[in-house]
Length: 153
Image (cartoon, rainbow, N blue to C red; front, side, top):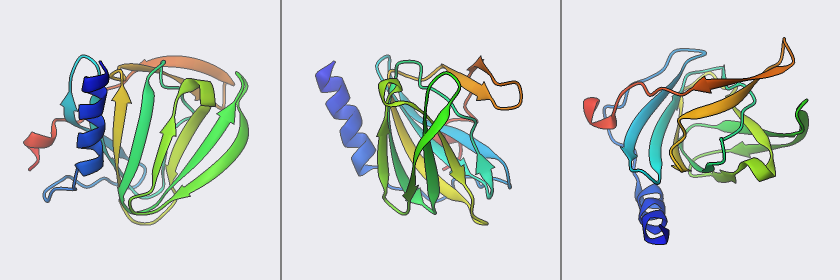
C-alpha cells in the first residue's frame, strides 16, 4: 500500500495540465477522472467562475489538492453544525491537504475566470457527506465524474 501511495503522489506532483480539457460555465464544476486504482484516484476539477462547493467531508479519504490554473479559496470548518475556522487562498501551484480529522471544508472560485485543480484521494472518494446550509442538516451523496481525461485530449 505504501508503494501504491508513493506512486500516486509521484503522479500527482508531476502532472501537467494537458491541452484540450473542457471548460466550465459560471457556477459549474466538472470532475474529470485521470486515473483510479483500488487504493487511490486522481481527479482534475474544472471550476467555472463563481463556483462554490457545499461544506463536505471526505468519507475517511485523505485529499491532496494542487491548483494548476487560476485561484481558489478554501474554507475549513469544524463541528456537526459547521463553524468556520480558517480560510486559505491558493494561486498557481498552491497545494493543500485535508482529511476528516482536520475538519470539513469547501472550495470556492470567487473569480470571473476558470480555475483548474488536481485532486488525489486515498481511498477513491465515491460518497461524501455534504452540509445543506438552508436545512442545517448533513446528507450523503454519491459523487460522479464528468468523464475520463482521455475522452477530452
